[in-house]
Image 1 (cartoon, rainbow, N blue to C red):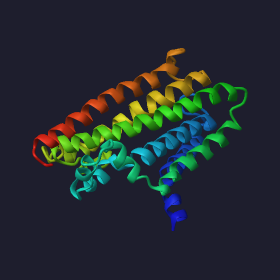
Image 2: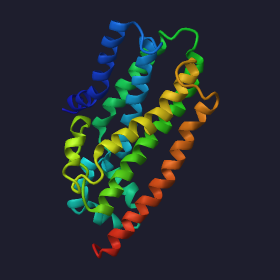
Image 3: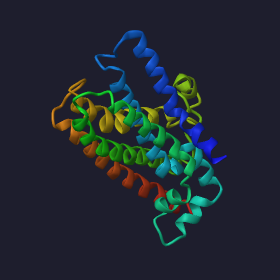
Amino acid sequence: MLFFKILVNSLDVVTPSLATVALVRAFGTIKGWNLPEVELLVGVSGASLGLGMLFGGAFDSFLFDGIYHNGEFEASLLRPFSAALLIASSNVRSYRVGRILFGLVLVVYSLFFIHGRQLSVLAVLPLSLACGGICISLLFTIDASALIYLRQSNSATRSLPFAVADLGYYPTSLFPAVARTIAIFVLGIGSTAYLPISYALGKGINFGIGSLLIGPVVTLMIFVVCRMFWRSSVESYRKRGAI
């Protein structure tokens, strides 16, 4: 059963990787990126998302909504530990490694076909994966903080095609999930994976050595915002007399 869950969890990486193969086979390259290079990005992105979900999955709005309403969040505030760390550690699910495993398999496979530049790419991969995982975990936590502060979930908007329609349910969809999705792909993946890897491969947008620093800087900034927002949301919860 666990193997099946891991396999299903990996489909978020398997599906886009197969779609990428189809696109590159049809057009040859994508903006000058060949198949191994694009698959490397897909693999790093998938593994980063997997790390973010493994350690911060409890704060995904769909899951945290249940934690918030079943009393687990309130109980965590009564413990002499960090509520965020307690919630995160108690909701680590082994099946979430599916994204990480398949993402890393895709990365290793891609590196065999990126001739002459493996060493430069290998040098940026650990930082990209670490910053990506941390950044995505923090973005999930900001999302959970908004739920606590506004007392409503953004689960009404779960996918891009229905974003405009769901906004019609304002204020129920006050902070739609589409905003978090864009943040994850632009900040969590763009700054921590695309920019450093494109710099290492000499492709795409290139800010020089700054491409390697953008990811850590963005992650640090999001951490500061996340910490402030989480504390503010917990304080507002306490002031409402919930506990």
